[in-house]
Image (cartoon, rainbow, N blue to C red; front, side):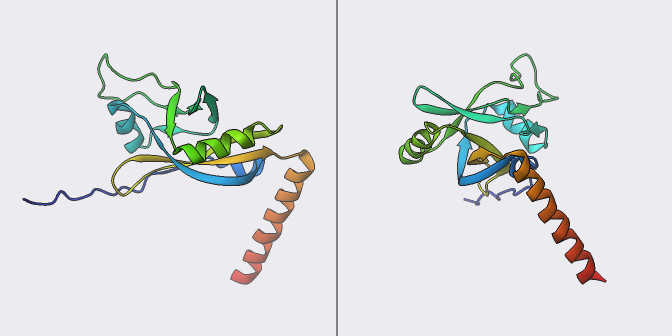
Length: 155
């Protein structure tokens, strides 16, 4: 029997504001429970994680405000674009995150969505704390210094 070939596409949807707005403390990779039309839209690159965040409902972790555009070829069974989607983590990871979330000022945000080698959609999430205004200014200064050094090295 012939082995099916694995199709690897370079899907890489990032949350660019995450590292600027938040101080990232702990990062994990989680699977996402999706329907058929949702994964087809993700493979087409029609997803946005800029406003998304994660929250606990009962004992499970869900991602909210993750916008996946409706599939163009879908019919009346197409998915809802901004529904809550369950994240797949093991119990120890969930208990660590739940314990940290009890501290004031922490949140869980998605950083990046990608397709694994086996074709499953994965989401990199991070436990984060919001930055103050002076921390953001510091980040901008560091970014400018790195850019100027790179320009000087290129010349």
